[in-house]
Image 1 (tube, one colour):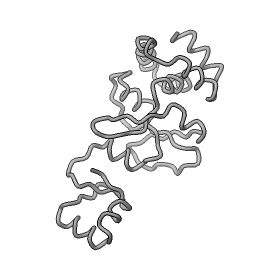
Image 2: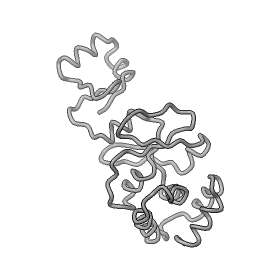
Image 3: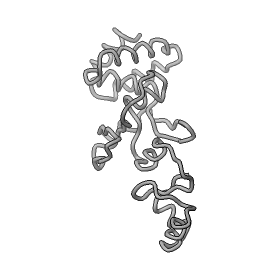
Image 4: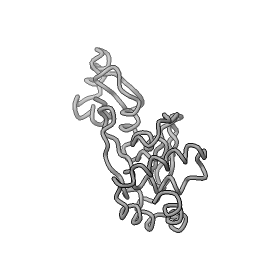
Length: 180
């Protein structure tokens, strides 16, 4: 399990006890402020613990929701517009208004790790809003996946998200032309 420095401090009470656990090998330092009682932790678990207020979006979320088989090279996270810039080379950060950050956010268990991620309905809106930033073939692959899943989706939620988020007209037109 991964622990933050604060969680370790609560568990071991003092820095001395924490250092003893590190020296004995019972605890392993993974990254700055992150520790684990297991030797191997997935990078997904580390990123999820390191950035607890971020939400997985775009390429990462498309892959985790099995809308594409393209494994993303980076972790795509979205944070509040006032959040500090993430300086991790493995992370691509997007900024969003804090009011809309909670729209469509769910918790998904991926490889034994709980991560914050957008649901499929919100991801469809994000896909359309950012379609000019994606390769055309990649965009078409994901749209095709959505066409297959259309009967499982909450269409009303998609329309509600489209109204509450920027680029409403573009999103609604694209939904009518390419998805529904």
